[in-house]
Length: 358
Picture 1 (cartoon, rainbow, N blue to C red):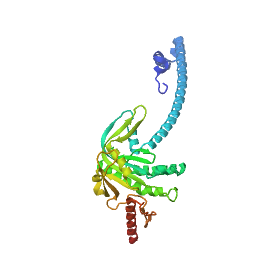
Picture 2 (picture 1 turned 180 degrees about the horizontal axis):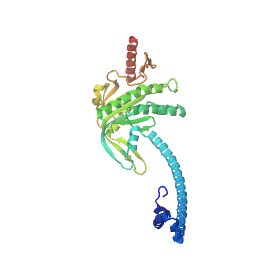
Picture 3 (picture 1 turned 90 degrees about the horizontal axis):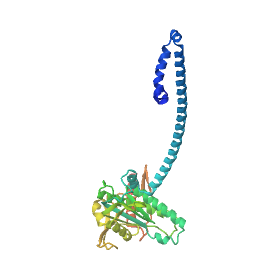
Picture 4 (picture 1 turned 90 degrees about the vertical axis):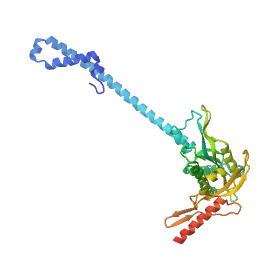
């Protein structure tokens, strides 16, 4: 038997049936038997020779088939390797266009672009933009402006990802993200993470923008708006052309309007967000505002920090072995926001405590 094949598969059922008796006959024949029936023995040898040749021919055919299959399999393996590399590259590109949370849901099969599935969820929505960025397009070189915008958005995405936000979209310099579309997320925890993210963005991104070469008279500031409410979250668009995973509803509009009403360098949140996490943040009331497109006044608060003297930023004060590193601080009356002032105060108090202990 050839490896992987039986005799009936190689010689056919009739040939395999004849081979065994021939081998028995020739194997048991002695000199007396040969003399008694020399013609019969000769015929048996001739039949065995024919079967052997048939077996050899079949073996040759099978070897050729085997070589062809191996060669074809190698070609297919190489083609699969190339296709896998393409899929990996496409997957990596897709990952860069999506938030980590949305990418994980799509790759895990939880979200499919073949259906307009959506659900009602109580989420916290965040909007931000750079103050005066549109006016800068007339006075700043496009290459410089592009670099500023890309570095700014990269920093925003890094911080948003670290806090677990679902990044919805970029609209020029504006950013929209939300928390709470995951069924396991508690609304209060989503609101807290959103405010913590916004504070870190104000602390870190402000210094990032200050470090960019835009001229001595320019200081870029961001303003941010946050609101919590029930929205419809899911797929919207065309199942055959383009689908978007987003949130819609009145709560989204309020967050957008709060961003427009926020002080430069500040974070304005709604009462709906504030009352969920009032004991975990430091905020000052800013009254009820009449916002465009909203039928009722919205209770607002300006966020100054997290409760318990927690620094939201990562680079104001960095403790190192045996000491600390304090980032450059700049207080500009009428420009430095409340968030920045509190960050500076907390950092200086922490630095003083470290100095007194050393």
